[in-house]
Length: 496
Image 1: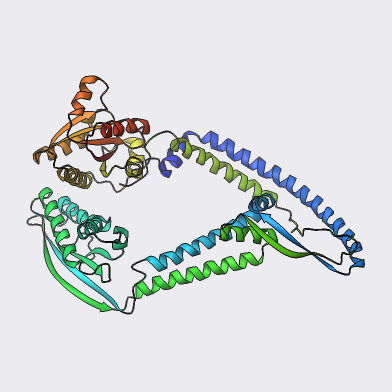
Image 2 (image 1 turned 90 degrees about the horizontal axis):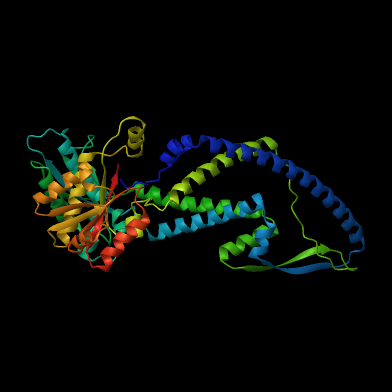
């Protein structure tokens, strides 16, 4: 459920319909500007061509008495280049520079990726097989599917990798480990009884096999507390040495992409004018100026002049520019709608909990499925949402956060009246069965008595409805907890 609260689907389907008249006006204005600017541009091109022909005729007369070449060293600054380069000429340089950055990024990934650094001709994998037992439950039972699904997410979403890094105090990141450890089922059925964890053997995964096995079995045992009658057993370990054609193909594709980027750069630079070449070199080198020595004119002894050779523009077709202007108008309209949401002072992303406030996101869930158009949009934005699976994962992460702090009481504060949320009521009952007292406080307290109660709280978890939670309000809650040394265990997101 790691999704944006302000989604492109919402903007296109809801805001686009609500403000369709604004989009039509902007599209019409863009089409008009495209027509007007093209007509004006074509007129200036005609004038420029006439001026250039006159200048060439004059220079041809002066060159008859030529005897020596005149050279000139020109110092270009980045500001001068950006002022001289307009429209497509500037964009061509920026495109070439983007290809250069893509090539550098690909090369860095090829050099630093633990997976791509392995030798495909001497490849070793260790396979850990596990069997899921389900008693009298059928394999299509929702509890059994949720159990399997949670096991796969535990490996796929790097939770296993993070625990390995922390447990073994590894020098690598969980991102590096995620390339080397994967999980799959044992058959065509996505919820097969047989689960297989593959560990690619390298320097960073050396001696991790038993740790992967123990952590996976421990997590399966935790899930068994939620899904009684379902468990997991270790089936066996196997090892294979082989030639990894997929790795070899991946390495070759990265190398070919680097060569392709360099070819595109070379072809583009060949067509550049002098100003474009100078500006490109400054972008690549990261400098602010460049000196160029060149023959500016041949055969000038009577007087020294500097004539800058300019590439003459060509006329543009009107209709494509009208269409492009209309499309640009629509795009600007959608950009305005996007930033209207973005600058609303609300919590927009789940990762804002960590990035802005340093809070761990403990999980989230969809509170209910609405009928009619709101329900349809909710299902489109969160098509994979399954309440049982979400609540199981949320329960585990919240319980883990509370237990990790050694607490037996937690205080929930956030958006609106929390006791109206059915999902939080279910969560509270599950936690209370584990001996964890839960207080559904609702909105941040405003009077002195409620603040006094909050000051006695042993631990606090924020509950915020995505895209309706004001950043200013969350700042107040986080600051209050930090100033009063109240443990802030994390945040829970709700989609209503």
